[in-house]
Image (cartoon, rainbow, N blue to C red; front, side):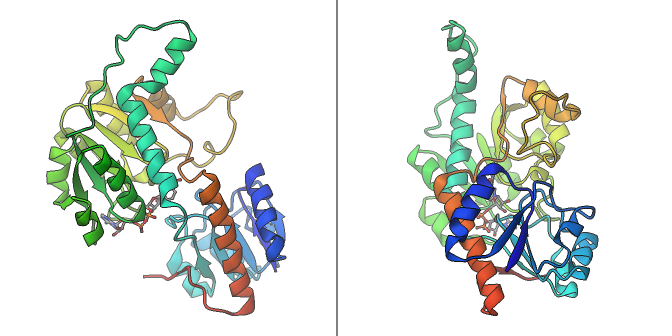
Length: 331
Ligand code: NAD
């Protein structure tokens, strides 16, 4: 089956091509993201494969459907960028990769937390410049601290397990609490309580209308002064401008983000020779207590291997008319 793969990088092309050896699909790689203006690249093609910053809104899906596309395969977990109601109306089926190494993202969240707390990014720069002074590098023990996990699904629970290993108190908030988090020693509480108590807040819930800007000016104001926020889920969970205000006042002690609300068009690209027009992002990276990574949480060998294999297996199942185990449904 022909599949147009949008938003591809070199590693996507290499790894999808290798995984495709056992499927034999005709993969057409496009660097451009899917949008209303690029949907025509898939005209006459039954399947498209998209990533986190492609826009599969109603108009784009309608254009894809008019061109004969019947399958949208997300090579990621989050699906906030796809209008599932529109897809259902248009007869387009949508699949994603539900299960690939939750360790990849959870471990990246821990990496951000440790680097931020112990100022590893600053020490790295200092020692390369012959500066071995410690002033400004003091962190706090994670042992005994309260860690709030917002979204205790697959990734949130792996993160919680690691933090339990550090000797942290685990506070959970989830629309659907689960026993596995409690078995780790976690305790569920209301959002206000966990925000009030936590020394570290790590975001692992999906971006939905209910969770959009779940960390906002109000929540930032009620946090313990100096608490750290880690976001490896979706940029829209955090009100970035409010976070900048809280960083400036010292209320927010540090911010580690792998995702950013306006990341489309910036992340996954080398803009080191360009002028970046996004003043909010530029302000963020200028703080000594902010670490920004460019949506690399998923970027481990194990995770990418599973993403490629699962995506192509879904396409093969669709082509053969078999059940789609990773299908997303509207509603
Ligand atoms: P999951 O579905 O296993 O877990 C999500 C959890 O959030 C569930 O327990 C769910 O009940 C909870 N939730 C849903 N709505 C909620 C609400 N309104 N309030 C509180 N909790 C709510 O998903 P996962 O595999 O753990 O992935 C979590 C998120 O991580 C994804 O949605 C995606 O946005 C993000 N992600 C990021 C990367 C990256 O590279 N940085 C990679 C993969 C996934």
